[in-house]
Image (tube, rainbow, N blue to C red; front, side, top):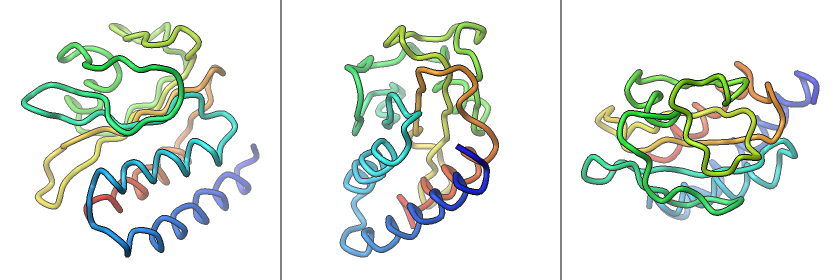
Length: 153
């Protein structure tokens, strides 16, 4: 997908989600809706979902794709890296990421975006995998960050 097409698609998705979110402020409903919309709007999204921090465990929630790891081992893998570093992590090749957790061996690249609540604490991550190497870039990072900010807006 070319750069302009990708930007335009993310902008339309953002607007669509903004309109839908007037109906509820429930974070799980918003996470579920984000997952469904993103997963079906991008053909390179293989697995799309959220992991929530619950009692210091990273537990799967609201996802589409193959069966996920239910709980991710603490402080390992891309999701925990995004939490520990407090920023979006883009992994062009998951096989080169130290401590990568393979819930599905078909995943080849990944992006993980931290989700912050109204007080600025990370409470979850958006995790997106692709079956193709190098699927994610700074455009995905920019717009996915904006989208997850809608959860607690």
